Image 1 (cartoon, rainbow, N blue to C red):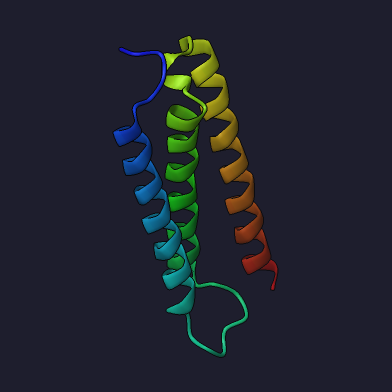
Image 2: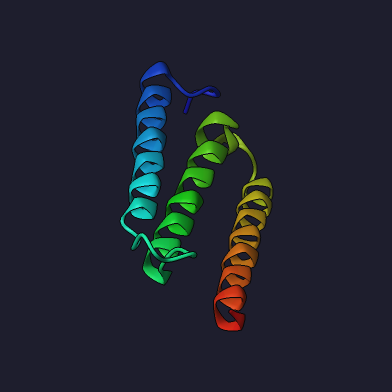
Length: 97
């Protein structure tokens, strides 16, 4: 394994990130016009796409795939914790309002 990602890997990752960004934008546009908050399925789709994008950024652009498992686990754990907090906050707002 080379220490740095190759151009092909970087371009494929970039294209994947752009496609997931478009998917997130489209899922928000599919919500009914009169709704104030995203539907639960749309918010889940956005959070899942965000999690995958964060994982790709960590492994490819920050090159954590070449790091020790402790570093990878720490950063992935922090991403999962952040997404869980965002998802939990969204659910609490939906239940309260």
